[in-house]
Length: 272
Ligand SMILES: [Zn+2]
Image (cartoon, rainbow, N blue to C red; front, side, top):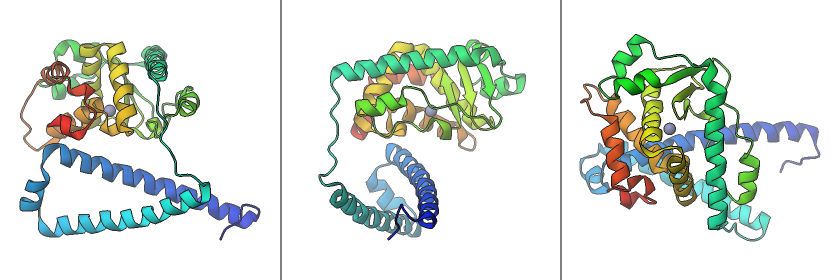
């Protein structure tokens, strides 16, 4: 077993953690893809019509991952003593988090707005069937070219309040701060579409409501991409990306979800 006191071991431990981090990101992406699949198709249909070999390989991979991580979980519990108990967040803390998120989004909008540029004519043309011309004229784009949006200063505080698994801002391809769309990675049509869906959500719901829905569903689901605001953006994005995608109005879809209370949904069942 490694020892933190041995300099050579220390290097190996650092390498191990880098690889663990890599595996974690890959797992999150697998989790996200599976979540999208669950939103669209029932397990009955998957079992009946899914390609057999693909299903078998997926089940096998998921089972062996589960076995491996379970065995580690047992060891963590032995090493740390008591099993980890989930921190229950009081209403007061949730409201505190809502106001932190709200202030953060507003600040970032002000920060990036001066360097924002309008959408090019080509990009507007690619997006117009889905978004209103007014929105496409209004949004501002910032491409960071190698830089990344920094983690919010309140993350340490949020962790202390009991929030775990905070969104990995630096690993997201884009972030939407109301009408300012900031790209960590190169702007492609698909990520632009995703960022624009959030801009519509901000317009329809307003900053306060958006922040509150985000925080409350994050508290319930514990994972960024299972927050309905996010899940909706992912599913509309994948609809847009289908070959020969049908045209639809994102604003209409967002209004529908808002009216039906689907952004406040706390479980998968509520999506059906
Ligand atoms: Zn998103």
